[in-house]
Amino acid sequence: MSDSTTPPTAAPAAPPRATESLVGYTHVIYALHSLSVLIGLTTFRSVAASFVWGLPSIIAVIMNYARRSATHGSYLESHFQWQIRTFWYAVLWAFVIATLKWPLLISLIGIPLYVAGRLALSIWIVYRVARGWIGLADRRPMYSGGA
Image: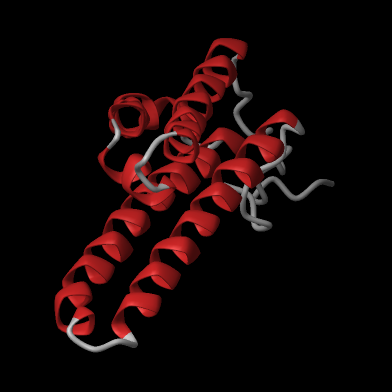
């Protein structure tokens, strides 16, 4: 006689697959962020300023928000979160550096600290864009716990 009170165990659902069009869309977003980095490297603007105030990165973050819900549950969700966080943390740190610039520029130590802050932010942005795009090419989520 079988026990009819225990429900049958269902197999765990597979995580949602990322469609090729959405993967391509995410590549375009990384390309836009990379374009901002390239503009910062090849013009008089710094990478940080080009990334935060440049049109390619602003368009990229708008694209992130426009399709964010379509990535829910897939590994692309972590890439969208990575891209959005990269942009907004860059904005935050650019604001902090700009705010501290004026009181620090009065002293001689302020100039090297200001330059070091902008350089550190620029290196961090390049790292985040490169690491994210490499992770996308390998079809890996950006965070070890999944999306």
